[in-house]
Amino acid sequence: MNEYRNLIGGRLVAAADGRTLDSVNPATGEVWARVPASGRADAEAAVAAAREAFPKWSALPALGRAHFLREVAGVFAAHAEELARIETTDNGRILRDTLKKDLPGMTHLWQIAAGQVLDAVKGETVILGPGSLGLTRREPYGVALCIIPWNSPISTFSAKAAYALAAGNTVIVKPAEQACASVLRLGELLAGVLPPGVLNIVSGLGEDVGDPLVRHRGVNKISLTGSTQTGQAITRASADHLKPLTFELGGKSPNIVFPDADLDAAAQGVTVNSIYTGNAGQVCVAGSRILIHRSVWDEMIERITSIAARVRLADPLDMATTMGPIVSEGQYERVTSYLDIAEKEGAELVFGGQTGADVVPSMPDGYWVAPTLFATSDNALRVCQEEIFGPVAVAIPFDTDDEALAVSNDSSYGLAAGVWTRDLGRAHRFVRDLQSGTVWVNTFRQMPPGLPFGGVKDSGYGHDAVLEYTREKAAIIQT
Ligand code: NAD
Image (tube, rainbow, N blue to C red; front, top):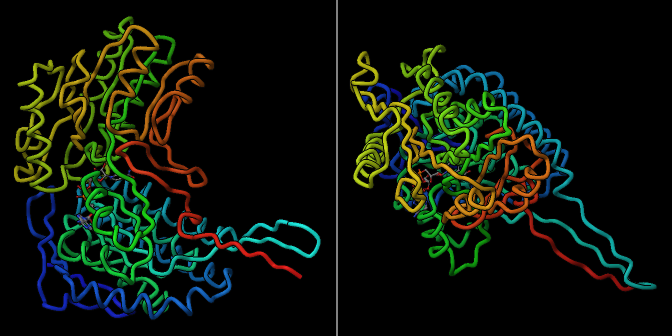
């Protein structure tokens, strides 16, 4: 049994009242780790530590902070295998992804953040008139609270903490209760790398420790990746102090396949690159609605079916596995409930629908859901409107560009969209007209550092790397 602790003020500590939560390996159903079930007292301690560390950290020259961030990148590189294995054991995301994509990608991201420290201290100069100079300066907020979900903890941790620290904030990370072991292990590794209190990590339930942190007057900025409902709860809870918020929330992203597309590339893009992924479609940008032009419907369904049949569900620690389990029993029940909902609503099952031991008999207690595709012409169905967060997609036929656009935008979400076409004019029109934070053309799920990543409508708002964690001050100097 692995026991993890919080990182508060540079020390590794249990929850103040000693309570723990069990962390379950979703491939086996076994409890493999215990993590602190933190509460209000731990939230208070983390805020106090972060506040104490802020003056010194924010006063460091930007390049001094860059030095620390590069040290953190070194820790990611040196412990890549260990961290990848912990995350895969904890949340079921396949080792092929955690080891080969996430850890190298995040090592890189910490280096990029180190290279962006100067952006956080750049301001503008405005000559207002003779003897009158206007200027702006960027300042960190103070204590930044980063609340993250369970589907890619190391990546989400990095995408927030690296930029918040680069900008001169001190940070409190609240990882998700379902899978936080990799982030807590990072806390152990970084305790001796960053000055005490600069980075604090407290695990526990959203309502027990997340909510007191959100409400705390000593927290100056909040960044959440999570569900729309949690974003709404945090907006309400933080309203008294008017805290600046960044939200990366859910989605119901369309992938639109036109008849002029490279259909082989599109089939790959709308399946294994999008929804039948290493972490079983538990991806915020999952292309869960596949819009297919009626003239290529049969060809596309055939291609999609054959790719899905080759997806290999098995032990996520095995490098040959291409799809892992659903993260927890609760999520498993949620995802499987949509299989019933789809059937009751009259959606046609094209393939899949198998669950549990029927999918991976050698690991009968794992939370397995086979790649599943429904078909319907009715975008109003719940399976077309609600985020399922599993390997369950819906195929929807269309006849005209206008119809494809209308169906795509007929969603409360607006996180991402894919367009598969060789027509440049059409590509540009859809980039312009899709209500979406990101539009991919002839590709999917690329999120390179250097481009913003965010959403519209219920998918959230705001994300601009290091600048997200600064505010601007204006000065007018009269001489
Ligand atoms: P969730 O919103 O339930 O939990 C996310 C985090 O918020 C957890 O750490 C949780 O403990 C915390 N939390 C919950 N209630 C809170 C409260 N009242 N106050 C403070 N903190 C609270 O989300 P989830 O089910 O764990 O994750 C899945 C969701 O995350 C999906 O909707 C998915 O689309 C979204 N997601 C979005 C992105 C993105 O970048 N847009 C990326 C990954 C996941």
